[in-house]
Amino acid sequence: MAPCIHLLLVWTTLLQSVLALPGVVYAPVASNATCRVMPGDLNWPRKYEWTQLNSSVNGRLIATTPEAFVCHDPSFDAETCDTLKSTWSFANPHLTSPIDILAPYFQNQSCDPYTPRDTPCFIGNYAPFSINVSSVSDIQAGLSFARDKNIRLVLKNTGHDILGKSTGKGALSLWLHNLKNIEFFDSYTRGGRYTGPYVRLGAGVIFEEIFSAADARKLRVLTGSCPTVSAGGGFATGGGHSAFTSVYGLAADNILEWEVVTPEGDHLVVTPDDHADLYWALSGGGPGTFAVVVSLTMRVYQDAPMTGAMLSYDNNTAGSNDKFWDSITTFHSTLSSAVDAGATIYYALTATSMTVFNIAIPTVNASVVSKILDPMRSNLAASGIPLNITSSVHSGFLDMYNTYLRPTVAVTPEAQVAGGRLIPRPIIEDQKASEELTSAFREATEAGFNLICTVLSANKKPPYDNSVLPAWRSALMTCLVQVPWDFEGPWSEMLEKQDVLTRSVMPQIEAATPNAGAYLNEASFLQSDWQQVFYGSNYPRLSAIKAKYDPDSLLYATTAVGSESWISNQDGRLCRG
Ligand SMILES: Cc1cc2nc3c(=O)[nH]c(=O)nc-3n(C[C@H](O)[C@H](O)[C@H](O)COP(=O)(O)OP(=O)(O)OC[C@H]3O[C@@H](n4cnc5c(N)ncnc54)[C@H](O)[C@@H]3O)c2cc1C
Image (cartoon, rainbow, N blue to C red; front, side):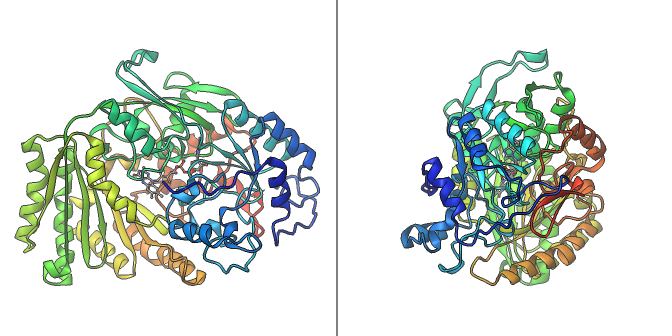
């Protein structure tokens, strides 16, 4: 893990330093009651009010500084800046900051390691104040302060969100990363419907911390591929796919309890039976809008020996570009039976190469493994592509993860321009429709984008009703259409790529997958008709639950339920739309 580069200074020093940031000039203006108050407004809280808030959270209020301030005068530090630069495309440096985020568009170059040293470091879209949350009362104090002062509030955990949900200009941020408790239990008793083992995870626990804790107990916990995502932030509330989705369903399908603080400050334990509407909304209806999650409780499963596999080939192996693309349709045709046999598969596709970097098979049973791998081998061989499939047996999930997923994830830049789409199984199972999808994938890659797809089945009815987008239940893949963000190139080029993706590439994939929807966590913040695409037929009920638990619309996040009530003005101020 990258070294912690967030400087912990005493409160008063930080308060002074943020107000003294070069270039931060706030003209005093009176804010309109329908808009959030921003720094520089006449009714922005006075210093004594921030000091009172700081006392009420036992000194855990931070007047923030973007972490790349070390790359700019007058604080320039060559060594620290170089370290930051080398990891800036990854989530790690942003994890340990109360405000920094991965999404470059929302960073908006206000303070990054790639702009010239003599460019001032601005607070920009980052929250100027953050509470380093350690307790329910810290959350309650933050919610209450933001409400009383009419300040924008954001929830930040690891900062992974690619849609810009975990930052906000002029906001007070609740930093939830340090809620780190992990407790395993043998048998669940509440509600009487499930009596098996479970885990309770503080909202800030990241997958890396779960991997080792679960492995030590020979248990499987549903975690995603990136070790630094949090379980209790966007992942499980948004759906949450893991290497075991095809066996156990999505993370949201496995939630037993949410411990939350509602926007009105109530500390609740939410289950399928207690506050059932909020349970339903939190389990799939997206992060950062219904309540602040303190912890989640979810089912866990016995770990067991499992199989991992990988394969790759390219247009040279195929003999020509056309044959390569024909082979993609052929490969796709083998996936339905693979997920039915329990596999979850991760692949990366470029214009000339296919890398299936992990076929996660939850068993070592030879006939199951053959059922998954043999059709890939034989169907592609029939298309003239001799495949070399590497496979290995592992003692359990972590061993398999360390062999296949970790090495790929570790070298794949995470800052990106991205869009996303769920790919319905019926499309893949219809030869003509599947060929049209392949054509759209080809167009996307030839326009310079990569497809990173997770192949899975989430079609089992969840044990408790939840608000996971219905399109997940018939999806065979969730695909990210992306290109890494080039921090050294012109900003305008990245905006141009975003534009090409939005106007041309995604519409072609959408046309090949009518009514398919997209995973709300792995998609574009510019997604058109996002209410339908991310939430589908659940949207009206989700909106009603949002209005019930957050009548003042205190929680806002881009493309989150209820966010259409707000618009972001040219200066980044949120105003009711
Ligand atoms: C490299 C990478 C790999 C990924 N791999 C997977 C994967 O394998 N499977 C998968 O399903 N997803 C995956 N994702 C998507 C990931 O689940 C989302 O980006 C998720 O939103 C990250 O949540 P976070 O809390 O870690 O990040 P943050 O950016 O801090 O928060 C994300 C959202 O959650 C809200 N939030 C955070 N904490 C809380 C809280 N305590 N209460 C309420 N709201 C909160 C924030 O306000 C924001 O809206 C991946 C993303 C990246 C960038």
